[in-house]
Length: 136
Ligand SMILES: Nc1ncnc2c1ncn2[C@@H]1O[C@H](COP(=O)(O)OP(=O)(O)O)[C@@H](O)[C@H]1O
Ligand SMILES: [Mg+2]
Image 1 (cartoon, rainbow, N blue to C red):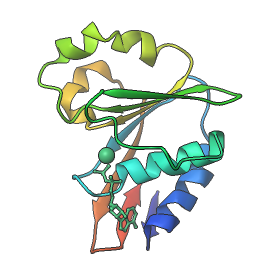
Image 2 (cartoon, rainbow, N blue to C red):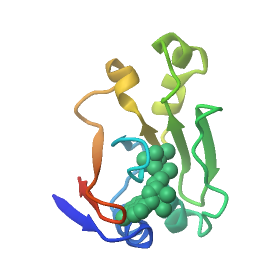
Image 3 (cartoon, rainbow, N blue to C red):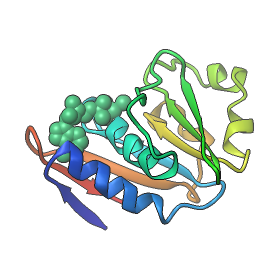
Image 4 (cartoon, rainbow, N blue to C red):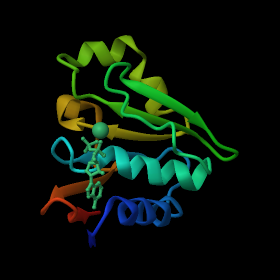
């Protein structure tokens, strides 16, 4: 399906709706260039589950940020700087993926071998300064 977001706020609202469809153990692969809005999307998800997203930043330097909600643990990964999939095995990636939490992965291209067709995908394309095409 497709959605055209007209603003950052719009993407957050879209993500809050999308969050309602998620289940325990879901893995969501976030595709899109730098600045397309992947992290903004995750903010909307956390707004729904945790009710506060002001501290959400991209985990570029730490690989993973963890959040806890009443229902699930939520793991936000950014693989942008990952050079080798072994870095991910070293942080115990499989334990996160199969923990029963919900995982969001920015730059899954860096480690496609970890994922199969059961993963959900979101692809965000920048159309202009404020418009984004969200395919899901
Ligand atoms: N419709 C939109 N949806 C999401 N972000 C948008 C939108 N329009 C403009 N932006 C801006 O684009 C940037 C997206 O940043 P970010 O989510 O960190 O990107 P990514 O994580 O994909 O690299 C933010 O500065 C945000 O304000
Ligand atoms: Mg990001």
